[in-house]
Length: 308
Image (cartoon, rainbow, N blue to C red):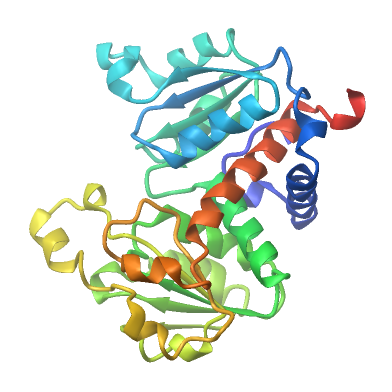
């Protein structure tokens, strides 16, 4: 595995190995403290981020490595007009591995064609977010004990939400997974995903307009925010941003072992009163992201705890 651009770059077997390694890191943190000693991770974030960037940095630091990079395009030479290709080719001389986020879809793929060091796509526009997908898979596996035989509800912005698109593609490879898509008409799942993933693979799915009508049947509820930055028309954003809010009332009919997930940041789509419900898994989900990124960095650099 040279680069990770799309979650489908990983086979099911590779995903299983990454999740097993992440589980072992959680159990034996001390064993992994120096596996990336003298290695450097560059975080090239042309778009704002909190959890993804900091979890990458924390992951490398906990492996004993070092971090360099920038947190926005304004603080890089992109502000002067430098191309992504040029930036990446320069940084590849300074680092052993690169995590890159960019607002333009396909930018990490273009970058990966220019360098020899591994590139991890940390999110490209509304396209892919493979390390969030790994985070989500790890959360589901640890909270539900399996990645098959599940009914997954996805709620909110299904049109522009790259985390949703990536998770659908990844989960489509597991047995007996049913998808329930909950959104307003304007933010429904793109037709190409319905055709290329659901219909092509004979996967059971349905589209609904309210949480209430499907809440009792869900094993997983994956909430997303309505993202202002993905809209061309602010009036549409204002009209739809409060459309789907999870609160205590809606939780009354949910399963006792429901797992509520959210890639964060949250605005108001989940009431803060839900945070104390034991079914709320989104803060644990953010923590799992650090461990799965530790496993990914190790795997892509070809290092292991057994060598230390």
